[in-house]
Length: 212
Image (cartoon, rainbow, N blue to C red; front, side, top):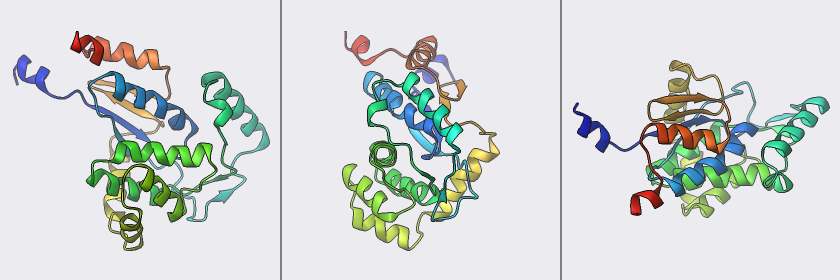
């Protein structure tokens, strides 16, 4: 492949994450901003942190001490977001949401759909293990909630979601989020300025700079 052919390829941004991960939740605003400011379309892929979680969820998944540390970290890292954050009381079941993400991806709306899921779970007290929460996210993202409900009931995307989970495992994903910005892999949550620096190092310019 020639240098010109390489430069003409879209810059690939992939985020491996789990909806139940607080670090992944704080990354959502960063990647929504990245999509606005750069000519990129981030792809959100599942990494299942807690496959042992039953469909009804696991109550009291965090001790009081861990919950206190998490609150302090989120307040420090995202002070503007913190007032609206509601940390879930239980560990929720992710896999049904992964199925729904595949459904949204087939319709080109997986990116806004993932934002809606995180908002419902982390700021509005929704349970992503419940179809009703996923249907509400679908409606916000411009999807047909009844069509999603049918797909979930029939498990139309279960195998694809499982294949995606297995792919993450096969390439050694262990952190959430794990981020691929072009040729660079970033493990864990980082400040937005770090993402910008990596983009610029690989020659990706903001939309404003491209328009000038």
